[in-house]
Length: 190
Ligand code: BEZ
Image (spheres, helix red, strand yellow):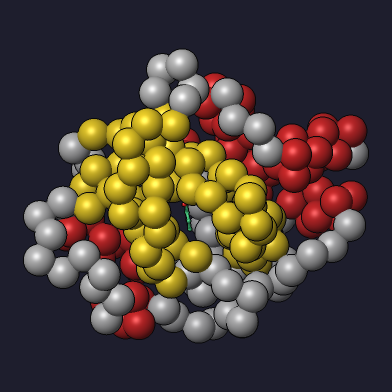
């Protein structure tokens, strides 16, 4: 298994900053098991969420990998999530937690106000699993992805819990996401 921990510790896009905005689009939306100063709903543009990254260490095993979220580039798309204002030392344990193919990337993000409108912008950090990482599984029919998710379990729990929690969290944010809601539907009718 690739381990991106050391690579990420060289990716210091916010060197010298006392605080960083970390944008969560997957489990970070509903499972923030790190200290943060503030959190705000936000979105990034030009990216779409997909269950195209294999999980061999959290929501699956090397023999029966699960599938978790990553982002693909998509012109004019909006990906909603949650931004966390953190201090830089929070990143080291996240680098370890997300070591199976995710790399830190710098992105512009837009905060969302209570009416759902985009307000201020800031630079932020995401963890991205791009299509050249060894754990990337890529596109498959939704029914196959839902079946794989239904079957997979790992040290962090059932893969289906990840998908259902993400769908619930996105609904609470008032976010649209056709891929996630279609997968949730497929999973429920299996
Ligand atoms: C996220 O929620 O943004 C995320 C969580 C785990 C790995 C990569 C991204």
